[in-house]
Image (cartoon, rainbow, N blue to C red):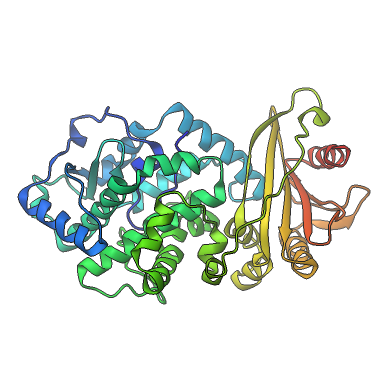
Length: 418
């Protein structure tokens, strides 16, 4: 499976997310680079410190045609990934009952993506208001967009980005962190090629399309889409200044990295690695009709982003900052769904801070939080119910989120039974 790394603010490697196939219609045609653009690629490769790919094709696409281009890249496997992640995101609260992640992603990409790169086809596209006759006639901002995508081509030539996507397919945390390395690297060296200083405090140069975000983009999804291009760029700048591009290359080559590393550069300096956390498969305990739909690692960013649904940024990120590892599994039966989570923290204080922040999240959403036989439970007005189970370890928080109170209580009982 090639995990669909989500498009974000600047230039989305949308074909990398979906795995491009050679089925684009004529309006998505590409051609080998002209001598001028080949020279541009060579200059960018020098800035990045890597050899340029020997062959590459490029083209333009109208902004109105971006949704169709994206649609042509999606496979049944990609659509299944969006569907299972939609289940998880609805439980967490990033999406409402009538919303789905694929539609939100396409809405976002149609309005904000300004470039795309395919590591499978060795092709890239620059998004324009109207198709251009040739890429040599691009405006300065479009040429800068092309520089970003050319950096992706250089990355892919040396590190096979589609294979990295395969490796991170079932890990939300690693997938987002890897995307932060890829896009942070591109933002940084795009800025260096432009001859502009990449200013992270106050915002890196992100090449946003004009206008507001689409109505279907919730604030929490927007934060996730932004992360690779803002926090990722900040992290790459720090890493590049301390160790050079060889350190970036290690992660592009497949060395594991978490969003905690991106958020806290000191963790990488100390050699810290996330701890392995496991949960029992409770399919049988849930009973007839239930099946495990997905599972993996959430990571520190996703935990903080979840808390920020109701908390302000500083309390949310502070409560998630003690993260040391986690595991989640999501189960479905018809219209019912439930997810179980086990999160490990650096110590009892950190675990208690997260548990308290989660209870504040629930009360802020209108839930009446009370202690029940299953644990500390809060039912939101839409019926979603979260139950924090009694702590089996002082440094861990175990909780379930169900689409209904019955589903949550059923899963909590099943988890206790193992």
